[in-house]
Image 1 (cartoon, helix red, strand yellow):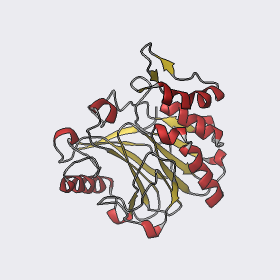
Image 2 (tube, helix red, strand yellow):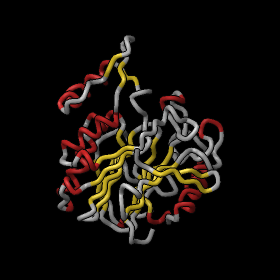
Image 3 (tube, rainbow, N blue to C red):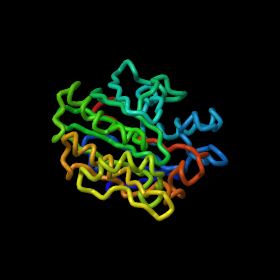
Image 4 (tube, one colour):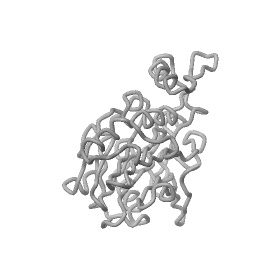
Length: 273
């Protein structure tokens, strides 16, 4: 299991620094903010129907606790696609305290120290990438559509083509996400993953006798990362299911679709944050 739980007052977060050395990598929980109702309390998303002022205050709370400067944070508009963007200092502050201005992007890559990559999650898989040789990081938002399209492998490929990354040098951590214990899908979605998982020698989605299938998104993304050249031993996950632990996290599936979003953030150490 990867990720160390830490707490500052009511604010709870998970740090992946022990498995991603020389990198700041965190995932926030759902407590410690000011949002109410289905978004209680630390919702970080503007697009879910929460009050904008509350979301802005929640983000400011997170940045303050993590010692991050909003002007150094980049958050894109996630659309459950497979687009990957390389960002640099020109993007600093984009989407940090307001709706995102970087459209249709579900994975961010940078080699700029101190530039903070951010993403919003409520069941989808947050994937943190780190190339310790070239000093490159990435943050991936992998829902079932992005996973099926191979967004994890695409992000690694962008690192290779842009920065000369060697995949075998990379480390990857997957944060809290919905697990196969709680993620049931129909035949159409299950079919998209059968070939991927079986090609990796893993069992395909398993049925429960009701025409629904249990899907392991973390395993599927692991398969993509290995296919991209990462070493299996350098890929870890948190072992936490967001749908099982709604006391700690927001879960889109468990809530019926009306809920907040947790935040994932990663940055290279050594730069101003």
